[in-house]
Image (cartoon, rainbow, N blue to C red; front, side, top):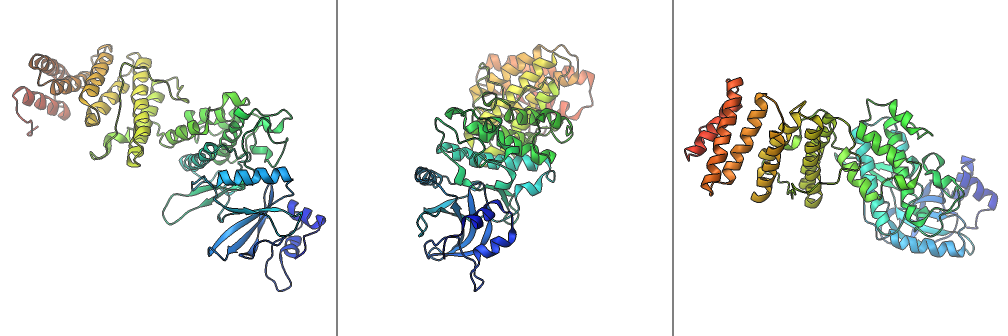
Length: 489
């Protein structure tokens, strides 16, 4: 088959006339054909569309017996061809379900025609079709998965440059959660001293401000382009609108769908200056994971998790932990919500076998509880009660020394609260009781903690004598004093 004319190729590239597609890709016998001859192992099965950098066809790979997608790259120069080959090799190293796999790259038979790339065939609705139709949590989880894939892309030294709703296809197998897959990878490139020319293969509504300017983008800032685009996608899914020049105003119109931490996350992604965005896609992945478990005014689900779920914690109670990148809530309630979310996410991470990440989330949970206690300044004891519940309910997750240090630190916070509420006395009794259990081999210390526990629980019962769980703890304290098992409590 002869190469298409410049006029026909232009019509296909711009998509100005659907009938021209049929003329271009069909032979007289009705079978679809590529615009140029390539290896005979590939049989054209139809035209899929035109992307930012080429024409895409559905094809059958006769050798490997599978359907594939083949993209013909538009008129690359010799230098561009070499660069695309190098980048395809890097892409081939990426193995993530959110990144379309690259199978092959090669030259067509016809001279002066087009480079082609053989890719995984991904079929399904585009992300653009889901704008405003998902719950906030569903939207966050989709972008979280996408960010994981882009993070893998960055890890091999590539940036995508044009993440937009049309470049993401949603697939779903059975009862599994939907999986977003990023396509049109032929415009992905390695960071270099100079960025791509202004407007090269990008989608204006979702590209970063620096991509629309004439100035070159510094190599160490190129990954921030993808961070901006992911933030724009998340805003698009939650609000149903592409980002405007004032995304903060857009977010105010959807307050009920967009929690304060989520608003802060999106606005940081969409910061005008790349330097004000997140430092890396890996950081974005971590925070999106946290946000997907953010549940305002909800008890921490980790406390109701089965006893078999172990979150390995390394608690350094004397070390001030770095605040989460998006945790600048100004009220105690917001910090408690964040603490609960981190605890729940830690549980999920442990289910997935990600111990290191789970420890990080658990540390953040404890940190936020402490910040909430300090911020409340005794006006509410809820943050302290949550922290005590977390520590004593999950104490099997700590080493003895870690647990002892954490209980003592929590006790110090409790003693600084001036309140006659029975719940506070009960919380302190629990701390004393568990400190006594930890120090049973040291008789003097053990007895001292037991005496404190007894005094505290009696104070709680003097105010609310008919509270069942107060009575249960009193029974356990008495049993420990009498060296019995406390099994009847």
